[in-house]
Image (cartoon, rainbow, N blue to C red; front, top):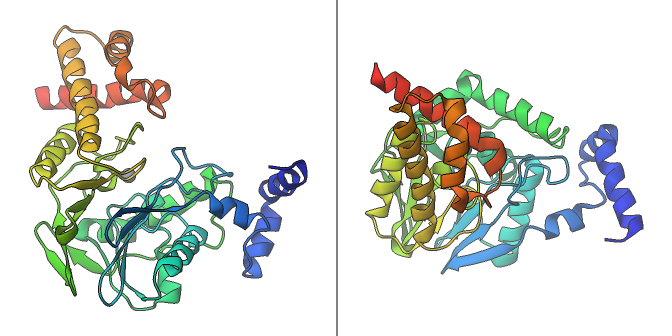
Length: 326
Ligand SMILES: [Zn+2]
């Protein structure tokens, strides 16, 4: 990056006013080409693509592009899974799709209520009004009850107002476990196993392509946000999905690949639960057990957020075990 470019780039982020004027004029910021070039399409299998977001937390530089928007091309149109966290990111996804096919987008799926996955619905809907947006019924209810607004404000704060032009577009169509939605030659089968990463996760199996979009039930090389979930529920959801023996796995964050990805994440959750449970029954406090658990779980120390989040994870699991104990 040249110094000249860096200064323009930096300017963009120190001036919320500049950003808002750019968006008000319906123009992307000057540095858009550089920004969007980071997000390349990757072919996972025939007609199934993922644009992997950065393995970072949302910040002003990445403008919230941290999840894995996916798209699948059926005979008559494109199905988008988790288009991302903002209007701008949704537009980047649309541009990438148009490089691969001239077919229209005919549906969207949202995997759960966390806004880094679905706030970009708006961009897709602006271009393709009235297409169905599928999600679990509890996600739709939760978004309408205020979670949508909460996530919009949170993402705006974390990215220092990169999402000024973004608004909440709630999913329109409810799905539940075992539902199958067929688009021409492709079947999208829904898997929902109760409280897991949240209470409204769906995992989406594209049956003919032997691929599963896991949502945040599985992350790759990254510590999860466990506050809205249940670790035992998450462990059991991963065990269920592994029984399907699909070939390809798309995590909510981090690179896609084979079943080593869900197995790795399952190992993290299982070791965490078993360690906390072990020390809990030795009457140690969550604070006291942090150091020995950190040592025994060094295998995961290269995951994004390991140092920062491990203590919080231990406390959350501790509370859950304590609750189950009474
Ligand atoms: Zn999530």
